[in-house]
Length: 370
Image: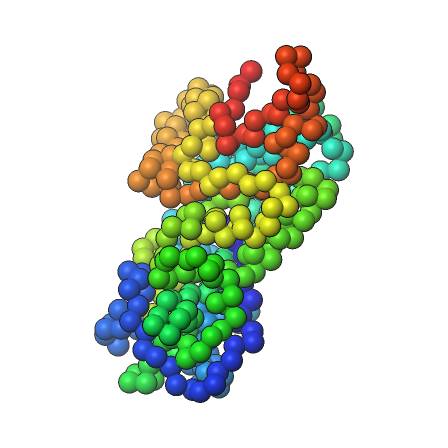
């Protein structure tokens, strides 16, 4: 899921003082990097001016500036995808990924009554590869069819209660950033559950807003939402990290030259749906794609190909998508669907049952191939 969170508007600073943050996350700045490993990038200059003017900024605001600033942002000024970029996504690895997602949407469209009004919306940055593969499936099934980067707030449990993690200038080194704790409560703390047991929590208010909007639309007009990303079900703590050249990168070093990301908390998304829709998952990508018939599709493509290099590419892509040590168990799928989709209101009565028999939701149960 790729969404951009708004900067932490409405922060209150009673005093300029901050607490030194002894952060335990393994992906964060160690604080001991030599100066030569921390080049002064245009984005770093911009951030230091900003912090000097307004005070420490939230991690969400830091991510928004670093990734999407129209003049110096990472996404604006470089091609970050592919082998020559800093990271790669599932659609870029294999055409099969997008094809199976196309089948998923068609499956849901058929199961919910083949509504003549059909809208397909992709929330998230990229080259359009995913949507291109999905539309190719749609075109091949024309007879059947008949014609968002997450920016997160970090909050840590302290003896004084929950405190948001901010980013400030290191007082010892003017061109270096560091993590600090807010001296008082901030709005991000409102998203912490009263029974939260973790010491560190990452929250994304704008992801919640998007899920609420999707849930409302789906509950009223039908449809479905399918979300795929790195993630967890409310079990992880420190997942904020940077990537440069396909390697982990210190999130505070040379801002603007590396991608910044964090895992999706699917338990938070489920909570933000507010019971308006049914939620499925998260389930591992390996399970979802196998249920969708990736093995069948791979065999078809291999049988049609006599080119050794293409066959090798297909097998390598399959391994990257399905191998548990690669993306198979690191990526998860999560869906939002109308409650009546599970209750079978749109389906015919089973002759042996007194209630409608719902169709299984593709991907979240084994897909029956006929």
